[in-house]
Amino acid sequence: MKARRSVSDATTPDRPTPAVLVLEDGRRYEGRAYGSRGQTLGEIVFATGMTGYQETLTDPSYAGQIVLMTAPHIGNTGANDEDMESRRIWVSGFVVREPARIASNFRSTRTLDADLESGGIVGISGIDTRAITRHIRSAGAMKSGIFSGDRFALSDGEQLELVRSGAAMRGRNLSDEVSTVEPFSVPAQGDRIGSVAVLDLGVKTSTLNHLAARGFEVLVLPQSVTAEHVLSLNPSALFFSNGPGDPAASDAHVALLQEVLRAGVPYFGICFGNQLLGRALGFRTYKLPFGHRGINQPVLDKTTGKVEITSQNHGFAVDMPIEGVHESRTGFGRVEVSHYSLNDQVVEGIRCLDRPAFSVQYHPESAAGPHDAEYLFDRFRDVVVAHNAATGAGDAK
Image (cartoon, rainbow, N blue to C red):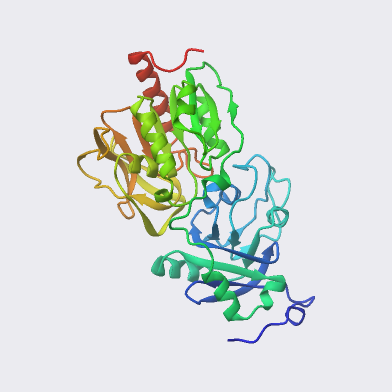
């Protein structure tokens, strides 16, 4: 075990505050403290987007994770209030190669460094992010920790013990940490077509705005609501958002979805909501080796035959054959895979053939990212309008 380091000796006017990233398998990467000083633990994952770091930081789906950016320069365009996807930064820690020395953009109102410090986000810079990414791609996502300030002085063995004693992502339910506590609504824009009940499992602001722009009155609900409460609202549709954690640990949300589906309410789910639809239909989920994270993930839409470049952030996926029509194991009729990843053939979308329900594994609100998948909100609107016209369902207020 290496002797304890002296922070006072390591930090001089000519040398920035030191920090170290420690991985569960014992690998260590020493660099410079970035953001807040101290200690943080979480699952280390990498995100491949060259832009959109503020949307990544404020995406609740990253709760419990230390995010490594593969783009070498981060912070170039500063930060602002418009690009916040939630009320705060959710990542457990932040790893970058080179923080921008100057923030330069006409929309910038502050630096990223200031946001990280005010948010208490412990980070590290000045390390070889390419080498770490290659290691994660080979060994898989794992527990990790960043230590700076007084915690940098801990011995190697003490730091590694802290990392290994941290919470694993498999089996972890984080919905109650990121969900709204009180329900709230977003008014419909233009002609109102009805209401959509949104179960907030870590929803992003841009998603709510896209739904409102399609004529939905958006009713955002805490993750703890019951199916009875959802149905008492008489919504035109149900929406499950993105969110962090293991879908196998969300039995209550699966039961809620099954009950609402049996009531005939149209459904659209994204990311975590796709995994929960898969479970509701009787399929299992599994953990990916290192997940899909970034704004350049290629997906094939089997309905149109078109390839979409998508924004993704998920470490779990639905275990379901991508070809053929399958029977739901829980009595919801025929289902099929509607989208799949062109990188590794992971299920990226599910469509029910006997019920007005579908989902995708990615983030069609494109914050940040390409706009290829925004049409899915239009598809959802068309499904709800057609269903309500055929059945007289939904509200008419």
